[in-house]
Image: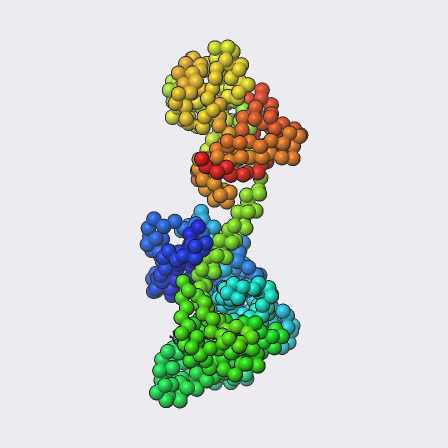
Length: 591
Ligand code: AMP
């Protein structure tokens, strides 16, 4: 399965085509310059064109804020889209762009499943004591002021890798996960669940970041708002604080480290404040969890800065944390080799450097949601319709039987779109006997075809081969008699191969493709039966339905107790949907 992972921002569309099972990135890139005359739809069209022959089986969308509503990755439908829209006030800078990306991608790829993966979902079930701000609770509840946390996809990904590396179930571990990049957050993960995280209602709280301050006395915010106005304060807190504000030069730790080495005081201050804040959180989170089994460092800084790691991790022996200086200096992680263990041999808690891979995590969660839906879907019964004997005519046959230029008169639509039962009927005549008034189905086709059951064959005195509809070449001869003439068909009589009509989305859901042979079990009636050799026919014009003939229906007594749904073989009504006949499907391996 190829999952297209989309991270739609206001000015760029980051994308990766990922095979989540193999953990392989097929293609990756960023389309820049959105917003100024170029829409998300334009970017998606450009992206899809660039994929060439690569197929996309599902799309995973990164969504920053899922509010309280979304505790897990969720398949997107119109209702989910509306619910994401409702979270916009919580993330006015991010969610609108995420939504534009989702809308454009759904329009461009309407037949593949789309799944939303939320940065907040991992933390939504944090304990109340951790998510509650100590302010007037009536106002907090009214305004939805609570701690949400972000970077959930990354914290989940690295903690799962850590558990795998340590060979212990995540459910038994207490992990402090440190995502240290341009945005930074710490997370206490106990038993696989986020029990505390440093970002709050917005991504401003917590650690020192590239250009955001993290924790502040709220009094500072009030002072800034008074002095600079609300917009000025917001800009200062989002863009001119953190490493950038402290160093006065850059939000890039590489540059800050280089300047610090040259004795720059602002750069040194930035480094020490950053490291101090992270250390404070490690201690706090060990206290929250009553101990610590592992620390994980990730993000651009966590994965790459040897000196920052050393600063952060010094003097933590009281927690059982001690690193091996050589291992720290040598640690190199990548998507292919994502884990470096830098613990010393005496450490009681492990320290791991792990390359995060949010796209892979999004692709995996997308695939998992689809598998779940598919599992539920594949247990979903297939409606069964019973085809009474019927006739399809071509133009020439119509002319002979009903007069030149005559047309079929639609009587009632059939379940498959565009098909109908007509008012017209013909007599079907074989060497042994005849069947009167057999219904003609419309519209006209390329060739005449008469579909009968095995019982009908005996009555007519012909052997009809079991064929798929349309495959009449070399089938049995038969004579048709209409009000205006008689038609001797050298071939065209078949016994229909039992089949299931599926829309491509059904086929995807059941995990089958056009031409597959499956078995269909009919249970819960008086004569349970498994139909073998059922052929799957996939077309975007089809609606999910299994078609069997009257003999087959009788064998399973599918008409038992039906309230006007199923019909007896004598009935002339074709394709009557079964009211109680439904079935489950098992795929048969191809020869
Ligand atoms: P991210 O947002 O995860 O891409 O992380 C970006 C941050 O990682 C920036 O502050 C970079 O300066 C920092 N970073 C990346 N590589 C290094 C490195 N080799 N040494 C120090 N910092 C680095």
